[in-house]
Length: 183
Image (cartoon, rainbow, N blue to C red):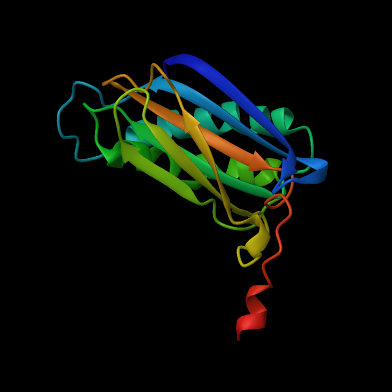
């Protein structure tokens, strides 16, 4: 696995809708910009050897970093794979849609739900949103949120941006009724 760089973003929302958010709502994102393991090979039928080689290393690298950056217990989480223009969406999907990647974050976050994801092919600098859901109950609406991310110089055509995102709470000042109220 060839990592070009790792980027960490944190955000603390202190006010929403003109009202204070106390404690501030904290989110964190950690992104690794890696060389696409299938770059320059044309169509690859069997992605499993590359997945087995790279996905566990990415999970082990990113999961502790995003938890540390958040600095609080993870209540909501998500993942991303943005593939450069010379790759296939399947390359990013292969790396993040495997327990060999996701279980590192699940364990670090004491989570049981599936990690929501965004995956797409895009040019460097493209804005993308990482969706988040509650770590143990995907029906808790207050934790359905997204984090907007952009890497100005990535992914390059032969790269993939792989990311994990975490929130220490639901949306700031969330006030939707529980899903069960609509049944």
